[in-house]
Length: 85
Image 1: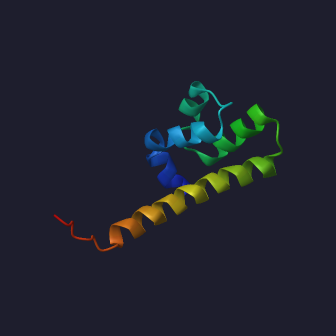
Image 2: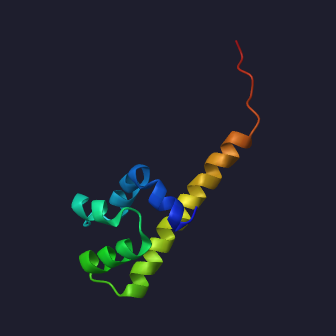
């Protein structure tokens, strides 16, 4: 997943973002709309961190989404075991 895809799926992903950055308000998340630079700016503003730190946090969030997608894909690819009955 890339930031363009995050923008497209923002309504589904914003809950995960809210868990990570609880100090960012719902109104802020409405403004961010999954845009990388907007998210970085709000992380800086709300948490008082340097831009580089905010970028790292945003990139780690994206990586966690990718890891989650990889796990979901691997789960779908596993053969299903027949139930015993």
